[in-house]
Figure: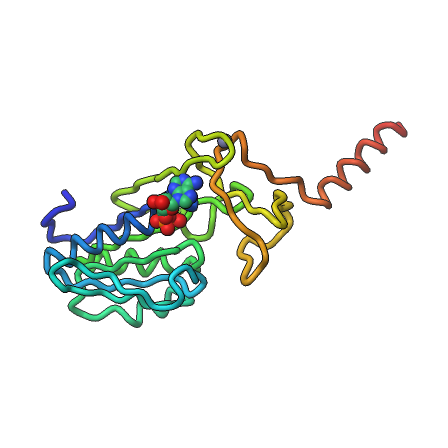
Length: 210
Ligand code: ADP
Ligand code: ZN
């Protein structure tokens, strides 16, 4: 279905950080280049792993440069009329408009490959990825290895000074001192929001008073 088909479609590679989503996206891009497809690659400008623009190349010398974008409108504006494959990495950082852009491209016969982490550090659905998973023709959920117990990791653990970060922090932390680990459901730790803790204490006190 996905090889040589003329019509467009959407495929999503999701999962926890370190699960190999970028590796898989680049593998698919490389194979599309080998097939001599016209490919354009985008990535969120918030992804600084590769220090700006990075280039994907196939062994026979075809190349695609990943263009950093800060929103979905920039993607819509940058896709050339003859492009056959569009790949978007770190899509969790993009706005909800990426759903409309991906659909419009697929409707125009473009193969759209999207990679992004599906949960934020709290274990809650992240940005536009849940909607993209819903409208995609093909989805793959990748796992990493839990650094605590060696099981399959599905959750992004945010750490601040080596300690699990509380839930009330911002979903997207730019330039923060935090770090991330891949963990399984059992080892994933999110201390409760401060306010929730206070409210729970208050409620407990009220019921004691009654
Ligand atoms: P993603 O895009 O999903 O964040 P990448 O493709 O950038 O993932 O990186 C995947 C690579 O990260 C793996 O091939 C492996 O070498 C490395 N890695 C580091 N930590 C882990 C881990 N806890 N589990 C699995 N792979 C890991
Ligand atoms: Zn674990």
